[in-house]
Figure 1 (cartoon, protein in one colour):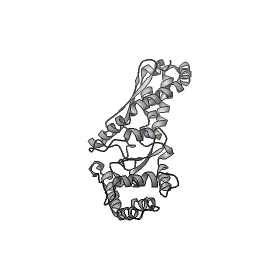
Figure 2: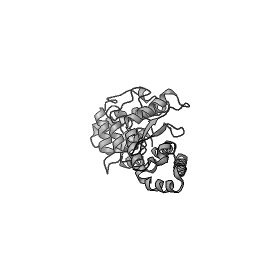
Figure 3: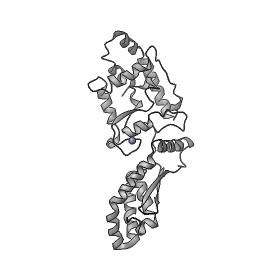
Figure 4: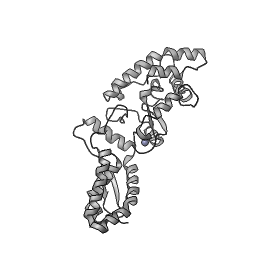
Length: 271
Ligand SMILES: [Zn+2]
């Protein structure tokens, strides 16, 4: 979805001639900024993008209005593009927390601070309301303090999420980020930054506690049949199956942590 074309569609029904003329005049600025955005995002340099306001003769507030009133609002010309962008994340899953459903579009660079990207598709990411809120005021200040951009940054090929079992009843799991040798300092730092900003440790721990409660009866059955070894074998299979699907899901980390805990496999799963 091209930035210039999207912008032109969004402003296609502006009635006020002066505003319309001013908006049409800044299309080249929006296209140039979008091209620069892609280059910078590819190089993990979004923090270098300047905050421009006004854009030509158009104040930032008019760009925010273009998003709110001409793109996000139902029945407006930009709305079909809004809907298409919202459908991009796999399985309707928020790409930031990888857990909750997509319910909104996030301005990766906030529209109030970077109004030139208010309706630029590469800056619009479908995500959940919670991540949108937690991310809200997070402006990339430097290379390390930049959230991972779902369209540009891929951290799925290396293992960075890990968990450990808390070995006291009721069993629980805590999550942390592990450093990846194959990545540079910046990418490692960004993963930690995102993990903390979006409070993923707490979020995943709550999921894991629920999961442990769900599998308790099944583990009891394995334990009665074959003791700790049978429990471990079951957990290892669950881990392997999830690991093959997704290296860094909270489920994969949870099953790895549980399978590796002698305390858990030896009966720690009971209430
Ligand atoms: Zn989320």
